[in-house]
Image 1 (cartoon, one colour):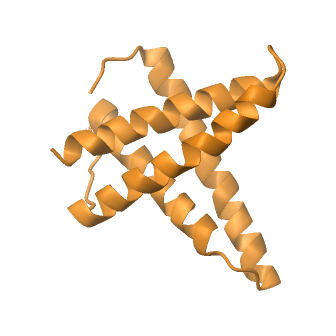
Image 2 (cartoon, one colour):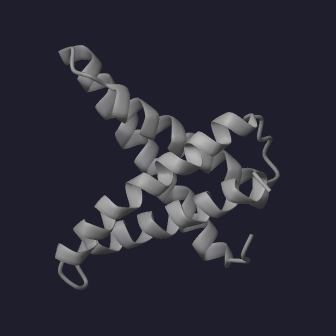
Length: 120
């Protein structure tokens, strides 16, 4: 896994935690409305696995997921990036939304790298 600064590590963890919280809230809201939650649930769970993987690498927190879950999470995280990159292309330079999405893409790529390393 590539070496990143402590600042990038902190921003990455915060970005993934924020994304996980947003997906958890969306899941709860959708469940209450009786909506289909499959996609949100898969993304939420994949974000959590990626977050746990990075925390294990950087902060020595236990990572207990099996190979199948790790592979599925990596694939789901990879599938999220194109939609965020589309949002990035539309965002104005210097806007808060652009900053958030840039950090989110970086965080997802680092999580994917971490998961890929586990699959070697």
